[in-house]
Image (tube, rainbow, N blue to C red):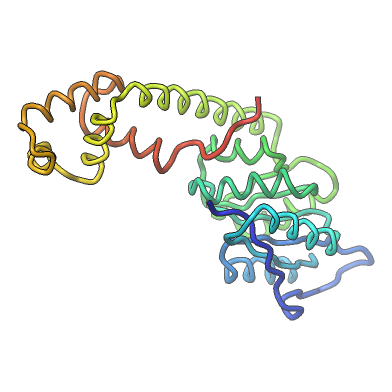
Length: 248
């Protein structure tokens, strides 16, 4: 499982363009160093003191280490760059927001309300799509640094509801998968790998009619009408499902 790995950038990576006696201090946390560097430099050109850290693979202990890094910087808030459509990156963002007690702003390419809601439920105070310009990001940084929310009340309610609805739907889907026999689950996995019914029968050394009967049983138990829909459900559960427990 991929978790948070602290990695402080070199002293040269902290670029300061001071405007006024009390510039806002931000820690920028990114999976990709080049993207994080670009955002930090753009913020620094707008009078925001930006320091970088990176996300990678490691242990829970490394999350604690990252928390220490953040504490040493003493930022007004953290800006995390994350593709929340990726379940692993979404999980890391949630762990970050829950584990490092500062105000967080999420910068993401995703426009999925439910994924935004996962981050907001974890404690993120604002979300900005990457399609917005850096001036919008800088404005959100200043708003959240002043202790205000970066999302309207209506948007916050909408994304939280979408996240909780997605969680319910996911649990219902997992329950339906629990009704499949081991053989049915194997057949569905092979369909998801791109094999045809005939190929599955040949590989399993059974009659093609036997596999067709198993496929029909899978469709009935999952409550779908086609092999395509069954494969899509399989992929949601295996690779795109809710990657962690929601808060009650």
